[in-house]
Image (cartoon, rainbow, N blue to C red; front, side, top):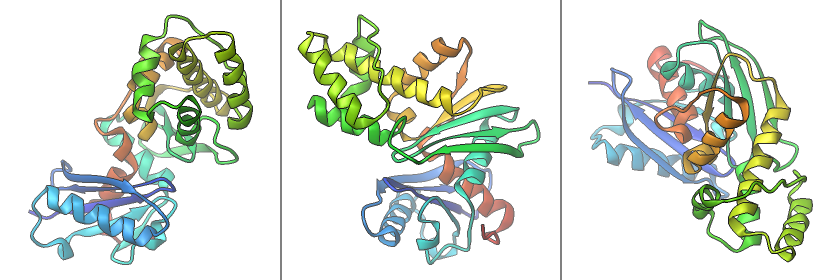
Length: 261
């Protein structure tokens, strides 16, 4: 059986996925991108190979994507992250959709038609609003572990509006809420609402809605809140943080690594 791989090097994390001929994920890994993208790509790939007990990693066709896609010297091809995310999502949800991907440093919306072709996209790269970096900064200011945000939001008893998107202004607003005696859980839920509002301002929500990315993988309650806000079901792929890497792996199997974009 032949294996195929996708490596998605983002500004915060690097993801690697290995699939078999049946397009099933048999190995995957997530590592910090750090300051050396080439090293991170190799580390993620090696970890994914170890997971699936691959004896001949040199024979795996690799497609790289993401911010650091040109830093993978052993990749046979490259593809844009927009194309890879769209391909990865459409594999699981083959219908017209608006894909919302919330990553560590950016968030994006991608429109995909009924045949799987992307028709438009928008990205938020100007600031941390609506991204994982925004949540990380807020967790630091509240002095709580990042992984506890989801649990705290679920325990919230009130909906506290947070008016600011800017991390700096939000920090000031949080201090005011703490001074007022607002519970931390209620503040965290307010932060989640702020992320949702920022995403909804980026683009219209057409067709079915799919959400992916590391923020979604670690904060499933955010998806539930999003569903309540828009009043419709939100689809989430099996490995939401790996959607781009999985899409790149699909390009590997479809084009045998001959892409460069």
